[in-house]
Length: 233
Length: 299
Image 1 (cartoon, each protein chain N blue to C red):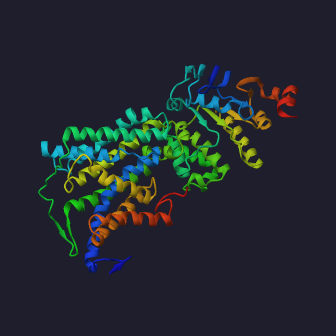
Image 2 (image 1 turned 90 degrees about the horizontal axis):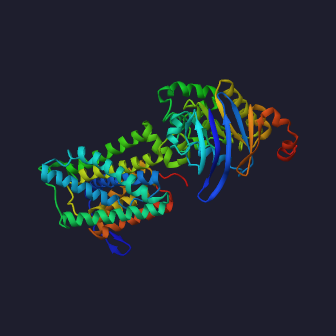
Image 3 (image 1 turned 135 degrees about the vertical axis):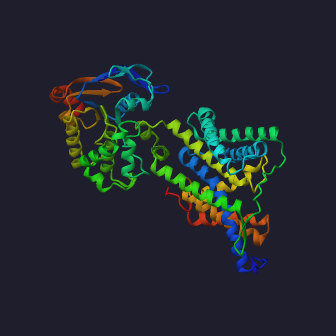
């Protein structure tokens, strides 16, 4: 579904990604793990068309999308829920959700809002409140809800557990599993290694702009080398 | 009456009230000019130095539509408002956005450059002479007892209120309006929702320009047109924007009315030129107590 081949990218003269290749299949939950500054968000922003990679290919459903404008990538159903949520703080929860369907699934807006508040009943309680007044966990729910409003075919979640309390992190991963069970393909970018490996089908580990380890999540979980060097166990 | 050693003339309450009422009508125009400015500031985070020049161009458009084709200045709105939108959209997309490279200080200077070019173009093409639109009804009006209000003043007030209300509804209830508000605060988030940020910038600039075009129509029956006419309004409009709270529509409207009333009462007591000092006085006074303006958001 998503196929990234030898992508080199960065900002101006600063190279961040030195040839990254990975794949996400139909209905698959793939985790990309790595510490701060490994290049995970750079990769996401190149996938979503915020930046254009220096070299390499990003294909979605067989079509080249490297360097394509972000709105066209949204049109295709590749939706990113960004790191730091990036909800619209000056707008109500309802309006944030409405804008999730600005480009895609616009006719199904009312139905999808019902669906999202069913998944996140908390958002219903905060419906007419400004998104900027929500707690971090609620903002994360809103960001995911807003992403779901576009009826994604592949959902990129960039560090959804960042800054959440342990209880909410549990909740977040349960939700990710639930979305996956409904057949949604998910590309989960996380620092939270253990929990990500528990829910993922396959995983990649990124270090300094390169994929260093890849394989089925279960194997990575038991990989002695990885456990010692990366997970600190 | 005595104020700080200056003896002020004393007026009856009716006269002061009359000044205040005519100030409301003047303030409505300030509000309309400020509306476009505050929208552009709110979304693009730039002070648009070309705003007054665009007002001037729109006033010339109204003037020529009247003098060449005999179009009534109010009817001209149907042409200059869409025209202003398209001109503003194209100006942002092709000149301002293209030269800015995403840096706000460059946008600022570009708008200044655009205004210098357009103003000198007007001077070259239309000369520095003042021109007047004459309408048969410009001295008709209604006598409120304390003050005589002419129809063009009433049209300016009603027009400003309607346009502010329409813009408020547009921003609140349409997808494009919501996208404008989204881009104003969270560009990256907006981009990831498939909002074309560059398009939204240009739309905002277009709407801001359409607002001054509407103001030009409403001004034409009462004000002369000349290449520097924009400064008359835009300097006060800057004050209104800051006073009302940068980026706030309601602030622009209330701020415009406050400044209009202050100016008229100031002129009554201090004379035509010294009276303008009251604008700065009320401006400083309000900002002392509300640094973000009347309706500004907390920083």
